[in-house]
Structure formats: structure tokens, C-alpha cells
Image 1 (cartoon, rainbow over the protein chains, first blue to last red):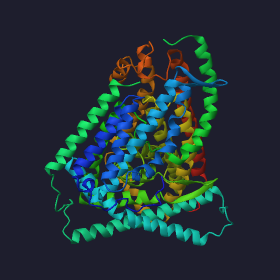
Image 2 (cartoon, rainbow over the protein chains, first blue to last red):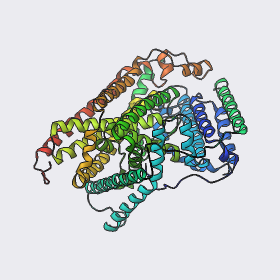
Image 3 (tube, rainbow over the protein chains, first blue to last red):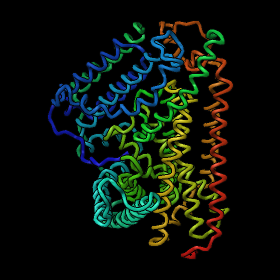
Image 4 (spheres, chains in turn blue, purple):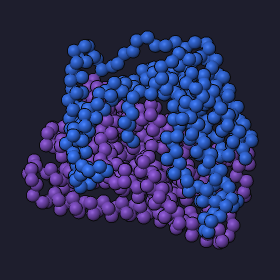
Length: 262
Length: 347
């Protein structure tokens, strides 16, 4: 999808969550989403626990409990992928309009999927806004993500903003050359598509040529095919305690989910 | 077994209404494309995606390392940034919506399938990690659908069509167009199958909705890909030959064949899978599924037995057949275009 807002979402801070070892944050976020996915449909008490946990983490990170909440609605459009469930899952009738029967089971499942998705995206948001990107990359590398892959992602991140600028310049140039009535685009659809395609090709050439220059500059500075990092953060005992607490909480939520499921 | 022919009857009416509903759903889905958020795929399905992704990435890293050496990191990194930025170049379509590039096919045509899969992996991973476009646990499938499948489909179709159509500029553009369109279609079909396997959306709705929307989105993809290829052909023709020289092409064919086979198996496993899923079992034991059910119903509660046979299989066959027909038509048109005298009288 489109990212006009390419700005880094990281929020500078010095809260307990910001200072937490990035490896623990990555593992913690994944475990949380794992549990949210694993929970059976209709496990409302567990969903509530997970939701409260996201508020708590947001509060602890100094961003305010509502921070992730406000930005978590981006998953809503995808709800459409599951919207037919109340009509297609057989079960007790909740409501009926003509031939359309809304079943209790289907509704439970639809709402459950939405809630799971919603709490998951909140924790993903919190991970992204409390962890500086270089720290995140370092954590991924420490967690055995292949080094060249992390290197490529690091590079991509470095030049993302440069190339986004290039593409914005291309777009500005197109707009400057395209006079059109308000609310009307000029030319045929095919022609507009071709222009956009030409811009993409243009951007590709610029990217290739830039990568050549970058590579030469790196060679001149002694690059030998691998990226190095300085100063890795250290894991403290209180970091470990927090992980243990988090895992205990998640295990509890899972247990409650399976015992008290609808 | 669920009760009787009355339920059967009601459901058959339903499915017709839902086909119309899916049209509405389609419009909405255009805004979300293929990024699946967490929660929409079940645990087993998500984990399979991760396993496939890890295998693909490890192999892609080895292939590109052999191809590019120490150039690997800077070149792949900058090109990943390129795809990300290229996705922001849009063109107005209608009613406030706009078309833009996914990029898998284009990168695969330029760089070869393995390098393209790697580039797309980075793009989609960052979209998920930083911008929450697509979830983390489902990231395996998001990358496979939008990166790996698109790259390999685009590359294979492009090469096949070039072999048939020949060398000229128009042949190249036609091959690029068909490759780009089909790459998006394949990604969409794969997504629909995963949603259905997870019990999030019945296949008879997800498949036509996803395939229908992405038949349109694919046209946008094809137009931009062609525009980009035409530009590259005019300015830096040498760049278009990088992919031709890329190694691992034979293995690429096997990957595509494997993907197609696994998609088919996944689709038909609806009708065949006899083992109850572990998690569903737990859910059932704890009272979530409290009706008396046969094993099939436990796995995919959407499907009662009388319905598994007909609409499902025929739905799958219809989409496959439709894709084949469109492919045939596109092929015929492409051949006609390629035979017409080229303005640039390409190489």
C-alpha cells in the first residue's frame, strides 16, 4: 500500500519499555501475537486480558494508554475478508432477513477474528514506536535472522527515504506538467498508467546508478561484503524478569482462554 | 452431520446472494490489497508460511550471493528501497481510487526470480514491522504471496512468452504485461486459499472476491510494468539482461511447479483431510464446538459435507479455467502485437 507518511514512527523516550533489551521486545511481541492467534474463538476474558496488557504497555512506555489504540484502526478494512462469516457459519440463528441468516457461531467467530487482529496490531505498533530501527535490526540479527538479510534490510532502510524523495520529485514533476480541471485527471487511463510506468522505470535507473555509486564508495572505505555493528546493548536481570513476567501472563491468558471458552 | 435438506436449500440461496455481496467486498479489498493482518490466519497455517519463507529466503540468499558477491548487500538494499518508493508512484483510476505497483514481476524480470524474491521479502518485512501493513505472525504468507509467488510467476511467464514471441520490443512488453497480471492473480488466489484454510472466509466467497478484485488490480500492475520496461528498454537496455544472466533458472522452474502443485493440493485438501486439527480438538473438548460433528466439520466448520463436493471444487476449477482462458487470450493478443511492425524495430 501507499506510504505517503514515510517518516520513522519511532518515538524517542527513556521509559522502561524503551530501555528494554530489543531482543526481549521482539520475542515478547511475537509471543503475544502467537497467543492472540492461538486462543479459541469467543474466549472473551482472555481477549480482555490481552487488551488490558496493550493499554498497560502503552502507559508504561510513556506514550499514554490510548496511543496504540488510536493508530490501530488500520486493520479495519481487512475485516471485510471475514465479514461473510456470520452468514456462512452454520449454527443457532441470531437474526434473519429474508434468506440471510445470521448465526451466533458465525458472529462470535467474526468478532473474535477482529479482536485478535486488533490487539495484535496494537502490540506491533508499540514494538515499532518504542524501538529504534537499528536496535530492532540488531535484535533480529542476534535472533538468528541471516546476516546478509539483515544487512540488506539495513541498507534498504538507509536509502528508503532517499528514494522516496526521488519518487516525490518525480511526482511533483508530473504534477507540474499536467494541467487538469479540478477532480478530473487528464488523458486516458492507459496513458496515465503508462506515464506512471515510465516514472517507475526512471526510478529504477536512478536506483541502479545510485547503488553503483554507493558500492564504489563502500569499496573505497574498505567494505568486504559484511556490515559490522558497534556497541551492542546488554541484557540486564530486570529485563529477564520482565520477560518471565510477560510469559507467565501470556500463559495465564492462554489457560483462561481454553478453560473458560464460551 | 448437520441436519437435512432444508439447511442445504437455504445455504444454496445464500451462496448466490453472497456472490453479489462479494462484489461490494471486492471494492473495499482494493484498498487493502493483499497485506493480511494478524488474527486472520490460523496458527497452523501461519506457521507453514514461516517455514516456507525461511526455506525460500535461505536459498535466495545463497543464489544472490553467488550471483552478486559482495555487491549483494548494497544492490539488493537499494533496489528494495526502490520497490518501496515505486509503490508510492500512483495514477488515478476512478472514484478516488488509484493504481500502483506491487513490483514482484517487474523486479523478477529485471533481476531474476531469486533476487526479486529477496528484494520483495525486505520490502514486505519492513511494511509489516514499521508500518503495520500486514501482521507479524502472518508475515510468512504475506511475503510468500506478494513477494515469492509474484516473483516466480512473473519471471516464468515472462520467459515462457519470450521464448514463444521472440526478441522484439513488443514481444518483451507483451510478455511483461502477461507476467505482471498473472503474478498478481496467483498471489491473490494463494491468499484466498489461506483465508479459507484458516476458516476466516469460505473459499467459494474468498476465491471469486480475491480473484475478481485482483484481475483489475493486475491490469494496473501490467500497465505500470510495461511502462517501466519500455522506459528501461529505451534508456538502459543493458539492465534488462541482468535477469537473463541470473543463475538458478532451472531451480526456478521447479519452484514454480512446486508452488502450483502445493496450491492445488492445499485447495483440494479441503475435501480430503481426514485428521482433526489439534487446536480444533482442544477447542471442541473445552466446549467451543458443541454440536455433534463429523471430523470434516471439526477442521473447517464452514463446510457441511453436502457442500464440500460441488461448489468448492467447481469454484476452484472455474478460477483455474478462467485464468487459463485469459492467459490464452492474452497470449494470442500478445502474438498479434509482436508480429505487428515495431516502431522502434527492436533488437
